[in-house]
Length: 203
Image: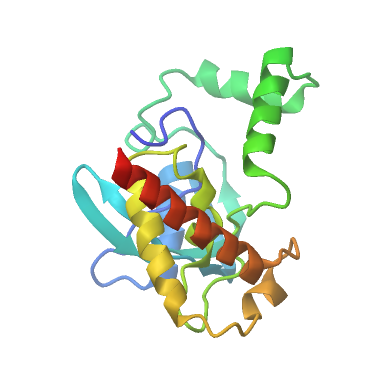
C-alpha cells in the first residue's frame, strides 16, 4: 500500500444513484463511525498517476464537515492496518502528550528542508482549479521527482504539458495562502524537469 503507516482523511467513490454530498456523509460514517453534515465544499484537485500498472486521472472533491453524533471508532472492514485498539490509544497519547524530536528526526527534517528549499509548495491545492486547467501542484512539486515512486515522473510530465495553457493571469497567486510566486516557481521547475529528463536520457 502506498500510504501504509500513515493516517488519511476519509474518502471514497460515489455509488450509483448517490449525489456527491450523500457519498461524503456515507463514507465518513463507514470509515469513522461518525454521523456528519456538510458545512461547505472546500475545493477540488487533479490527481494523475499509475498504480498497480494502471493509469488513473481524476478530480477528487474535498468537503468540510461537522460531527452531528457518534463516536470515532475503528471500522474493521475499513481499517486493515491497525490490529489493536491499543495502537489507536498509543497514537492519541502521543498527540496529547508533550514530546521532543530525537536528534535523528531533527536531522531528517533539516535534510528535507534543505532539499525542498524556501519557499516551497505545501500541496494544499488552494490554487486549484486553474481557469486554464494547468495542473499547478504537480508542477510546483516537480523537484521531488526522485523522492517518490516510479509514477511520479509521468505525473509531472503530464502536468508540465498543461502549462502550455497558462496565460500568466496570476489567479493562482491570489489564492495561495503562502503568497508564493507561483508563476516564477513553475517556470524554474519546468526548467529543472527538462534538465532532469535530459540527464535521464543519457543514463
